[in-house]
Length: 156
Image (cartoon, rainbow, N blue to C red; front, side, top):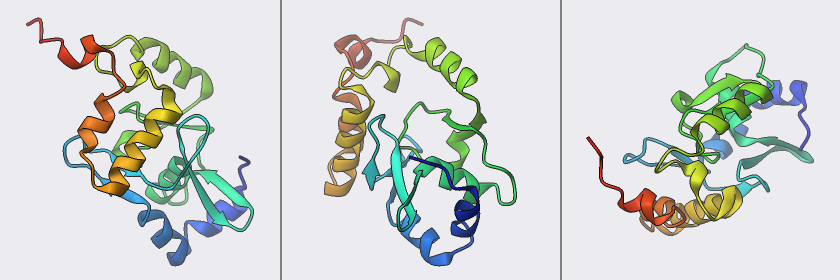
């Protein structure tokens, strides 16, 4: 996927493109995430066609919408660690180095989406498919977590 800054700048001002973007989002009150229900990349991020032949990672489009006039950062991270999430409050400006350090620091946290045994893409597909079919999103999120993550009682 390539980035096309001028095309992205145009797309975030086009009401038709914005409407298409929001049509592919399902908010989840339980997790507060806004799940992407469109195409998914190999790493589990949403893919959004902003124009014929021009694809961006969906959260980059979402970040650009939430921060009009600001340059899109090199990496848009997720505070929730869910690559499908489009909730503006969960998106953060980042860099490859910072994003990797955050992943490394949080990947062993019980219950973290980063511990999903299905991998990012399969997890994303399961959540997207649950959102599209009306299936319970919490179940779809938890299915790939190790037993300890799903059943560990709080220690304090």
